[in-house]
Structures are given as C-alpha cells and as structure tokens.
Length: 174
Image (cartoon, rainbow, N blue to C red):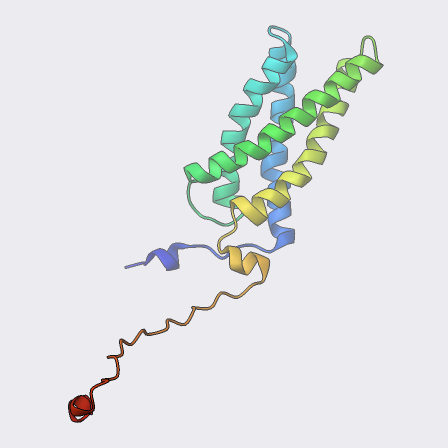
C-alpha cells in the first residue's frame, strides 16, 4: 500500500523545471498566439487575448502542476488562483506591448504582431516561471528560502503559594 509521501514525486532541479516550463508553457503560449489572432478577426483584440489567456492559464497551470514542477497531481484552487494572478500581469504586459505597436506602426503586419506578442509573452514567461517555482508550486516554503524552522520552547508556568506571614503557619508550608 502506497502512502501519500511515496506517491509524491521529487521536485525537479531548476534547469529541468525550466526546460519543462518552456515546453509546456511555450507550447500553450504558441497555440494561444494563433488562437488570439484567429479570434481577433471576429472580436476586439483585447477581448480575444483575455479569453485565450483565461483558457490557456487553466491548461498551463494543470500541465505545470502535473509535469513541470513535479507535483504529480492536479493543481489546487489556491495554485490556480495564484497562477491567475501572474497571468493577469502577463495579460497586461502583452496588451501594453500590442497597444504600443499599434501606436508606433499604423498598419502592422500579422507577422510583426506575432513577433511583438511572442516577445512580450517570453518576457512575462520568464517572470512567471520564477513566481510559479518559488511561490505557487513551492513544496516547502522553508526549503525554498533556505531557512530552517525550529520549534519554540514552551515554558511551564508553576503556581507558587504565597509565603505564610504567620509564624505559626510556617510548619504547614514546609
């Protein structure tokens, strides 16, 4: 019979985790860029990016929980919420990059839009890797930060009887 501890996979090293992050997250990111481009032909770009970001974040968080960071199981609600926070920041950066492109180039080509979008995604991806590894999927925060937790000593409280003030009572106090 396996215990929960034996079912847990060992956390991969930083290089392995980053390689897995690039494959899983990068694959989802590239697919997302094509999905955004396709959706943006029907709806406003910012809305298309928001929808694709939401769906791709759910998918990528599951992949990262199962494969990238060695959790070996589904992502928890807390992990999805924390990952969504980092994805919201990535969404803001990609939107700002695309708005800057629209401001600088009157009619950018689809190829240039893809380059700008993927470049912004790559920059935010590196930041997301750090957040996901060090915060969202950190197994033991004390190990991740290098600190050691120790138990605090518990001090016993002893009730003392007041010293008798009557000399006749001294033989009872002893």
